[in-house]
Amino acid sequence: MENQKKNIKPEEIWSYYLDDSKMPSPEEVANFPDTKELDRKVDEECKKIAKEWGL
Image (cartoon, rainbow, N blue to C red; front, top):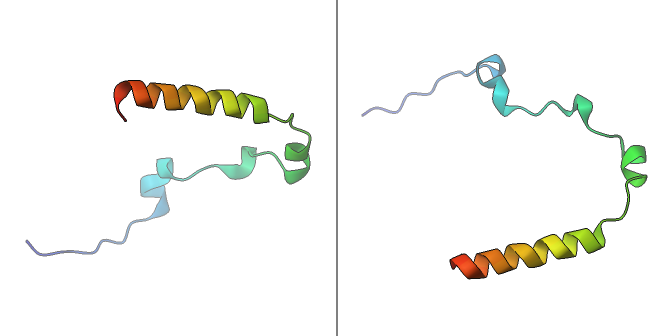
């Protein structure tokens, strides 16, 4: 089988591109609440699930 390179246009695979026009600005991100406690709880639960399922 011969390898062939194709010229792929972004329009052909547009669903793989992120639309960052809806992303918050750095100023808006600075106003987000601190989620360290929530992040810690989620991490602990993920570790429990991973251990339970042998992942």
